[in-house]
Image 1 (cartoon, rainbow, N blue to C red):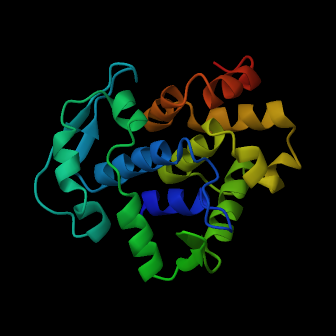
Image 2: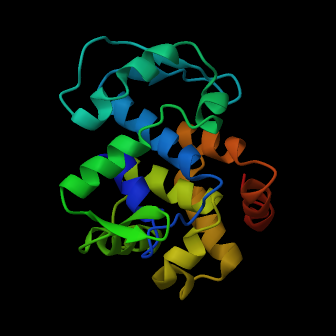
Length: 212
């Protein structure tokens, strides 16, 4: 499963609504860039996040239908600042992600008044949250993907609520410090933090206290 698909599952409530309507697309954009980077399509400049740009380094397809659906979008991002790209929700894979997760049975379509919602089905979301909780509790080794997903949850102010097993051990400040220690060096996490800055980001920064 792609990182962007995992991010969407994590941010989708049991009723099909988003855990973070204002910043859902920001989270998916960061995750999508991570997937395109893993596929060798893009790289991110290794400079401070405020100066980092998206570099398109390869042409052609990835072989993944979700990623390939956004290749034209990705080409248009060449040279763009990373933070503004993530803040704009680019690349936007949400429709492709929802379609693929529905096709594979991770989401199911539910009709609602004047709308159709896609709600989590099966155990994938629960398993993802359990794994991320284990990472925070130092019971599992974090992957690069785990770092990004935890950073997203933290900077959208969702980590404490969605990872109850972790907040039972750590108080709010301790949990922020733990996740900051895991995620603060990740460029995409930094971009998410900048993109949501002034809202969720300020809360996280205040709670982090003395974390460098």
